[in-house]
Length: 186
Image 1: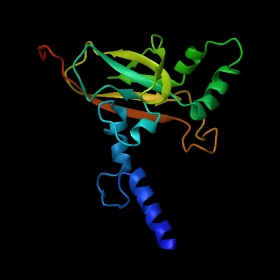
Image 2: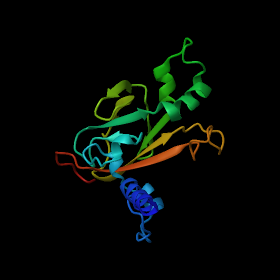
Image 3: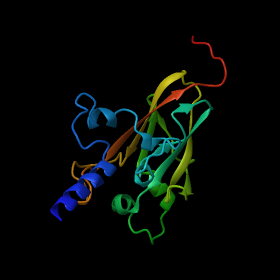
């Protein structure tokens, strides 16, 4: 019976984690956190990616003039912050504006306004959140990084609740901007 429990726990860990060994010595979790993670791309879903309330873009390669971005609303995590920002949700408040305050988006050093982001329901992810577009005009072709911050106005280092390790999160989403037309490199 003990053997079944041990093997079962090992299988669950292998299913939930990328690796259960420490064989990735030079390319560990910290390096990947600053790099590419499949959860951020809708065309690269993995088993657990659907469950993670992380920002998402459509694909690693972007060729259009705008980049679609989904910012998830995760009630267990976000309601703690929303109540401190905006007060009681039953009161007379603009709940969508309040939700926009939870996020900050930056591309190539330019802050992106979230005023045009609209409420969205994603049945494929079983999530709700904000959906909007990030303009790519004026961007040079090549590798770019979209920086998305959850709780950018964090005033302290401690999380509000014991369920979370961090009081704010930074998501770096690299993508290749490859416009479908020729541009001069001047």
